[in-house]
Length: 396
Image 1 (cartoon, rainbow, N blue to C red):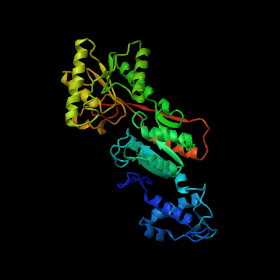
Image 2 (tube, one colour):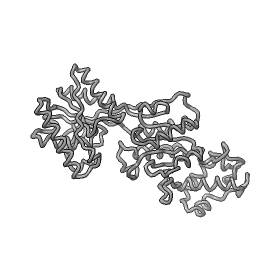
Image 3 (cartoon, rainbow, N blue to C red):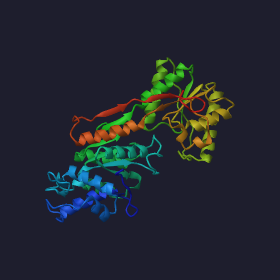
């Protein structure tokens, strides 16, 4: 992976080994240390000089040829300094795609939750690398003052943003600056603020509509959305809109969304917050039962937030997914923070297939950089999958 780690001194991205090789060569050309036509040291020598693996040096030099920093003479396996740096200025920055994400935690791609900004960002970096592009991963939560200026002063080749627009003003500022500077940029999501850019996303409205239709087909009529907070994010509002559309199709009146969480607890997921959120969900269920509107199905914000709701249904003396069907979203039931406190599963969920979003984001940025897209912003909408689960949490 050609992504970067956080530099502990200034919070800016630290170069990957391959980027270090390219930066060294770029500066050597600019300084005149390697005048045009001069033989460049072997890959093994470069690896030893810069403290990188030989295969990393080889990959970097292959990229250097593509950028015009190095050339081969016909019949020779040696590389020589290029006659110019393509595009003028900082050719390395001009070929780099900066991938921005808000990441409160950091792990590797294998362990990152599939629904998270972190997973999307890491997978975009991986796919850009496989496409032969340099990619620099930037955590917007760790960006120091002036960090965006440093990125745009280098005139990046492109940018991909995986953060939600409601949560990450840094990412939105970066997109706005890309538009002003004519830098190719692609974003994850379909909020109105993103529609001036190439974007990739899953249709949350259609996913929630399909879940509600499934609940209706299974004989449920009193379907109540249960979210920890009132839906404010664009994708939350879209999920609620999909539910309402399906209810109207069935000739039923949508029921108000229940916000059972507490601002004091936030979205933290510990044993204590699980217990408190379960108590809050139980209180809401008891109130609905007193009113004679106890639900026969509950549509939750996502799989993780089905857990306190399922526990509350049990505390009410009812059987989850028999008396009240519980629907989640994201198909990440076993990987949420509340999973360790509740073993029961939602009856139905939606898999957004986020890996398809990261694939589309990488392809959009590269295609835009190479001039292969129409002038108007492009949208890649990939199909979600309705997933029905048994009592063991396995697909039926």
